[in-house]
Image 1 (cartoon, helix red, strand yellow):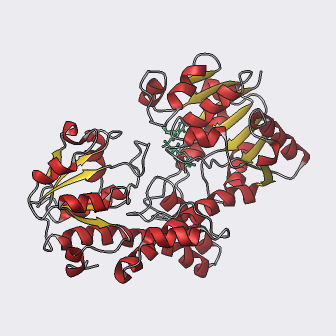
Image 2 (image 1 turned 180 degrees about the horizontal axis):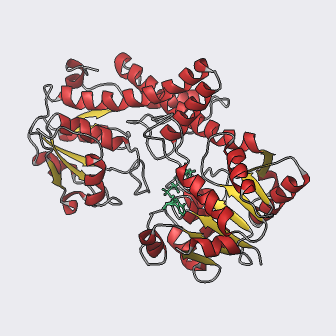
Image 3 (image 1 turned 90 degrees about the vertical axis):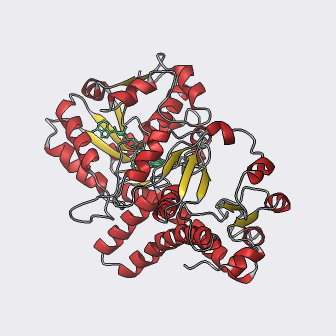
Length: 453
Ligand code: NAD
């Protein structure tokens, strides 16, 4: 029986390993983590992350061939294949701060593997890492190897939160990079055989290590760039009277462009896009490519611009101040069907409103009040002007929203600002709301109150 151990029981490690276990009953999969609360949650009825379909997959194989444990060293020692799926956040201090990936967690995982291994291992990079990380990991492992043979593979994960299980069951492709040596090819083949249990062979791409590492950063950069491109258009749409949904539909019909990922919004969030682009920018700079670095930097600049543009629109529409005005924020996670709030644009929007002294009530069915408080307190804010953050009363807005009732209870003029183009703007206008839909022709009121951005 092949034994797999995955270091890191997070948004990637948990779901990917659960799917491997469910699809490969003959493989024993153990997911390990240094965080006891996380492992306890994986072993409980309330999993630590929300993903549609995840509960069912975990329940089908937990205790059978899927295990969650804090005994990291034991399971690493016993494994044939070790996935490393630890977090690789942006460095906050030191060389490359604000851009480079922080590989502290990765390095300590690699050193631990070297310490406890007694048999040959295939070590798989599942985390998103800078190009050439495999070389550094290889050095750590081989310099401490005690005669053990390590093969490093890059197998970046392309799942999207909110559709992780669907993506893992039917991936567009699985990418495996390895050394172009006989041992390297053998290791690639061993990992390929795991995925071949359910992924068609033609969807499993094998490349050299550096192509695999760079492809992950490139994919996220391209995806984020599409969002920034359509968001840049949304600003122009508002200025000209064009409708961004119509523009997106029209350009998406071009088969070279395609219809997906063309929705205007208040900006992208999540733990990956910004982090990976910053990392890409840093790699370009380190390789003497400032023009390329600047090109990708612009994707993040537009994203920041879109978030501040939204806040400015809200504030300017309400006579240039939201001080003491009650604002209900519906949705806080970075997108639907997830409780993940990492880098969610909602943080910037709420902070912008709180900075102008609004009274903000926030509700998201998948995010706890404590998490929201933590996210909003994370960075510096003005201690002299305490925030007026009020707990929401979920019952008031939990199920179907009764907009007529909401309107009746609001001060007039009453506003709805839709950062995702999800509400029926016409219906709300009939009720009497002034509605702002991102990238759509502006109501007369909003036209007269141009955003100050
Ligand atoms: P996460 O923070 O949810 O999980 C990482 C886990 O690793 C944490 O539970 C942490 O306790 C654990 N950990 C850290 N160091 C450890 C160590 N030395 N030993 C054992 N456990 C350790 O992160 P995530 O969202 O799962 O992302 C993991 C990696 O996958 C990142 O590199 C990320 O860029 C990449 N990725 C994420 C997504 C996504 O949608 N979240 C998608 C594709 C790729």
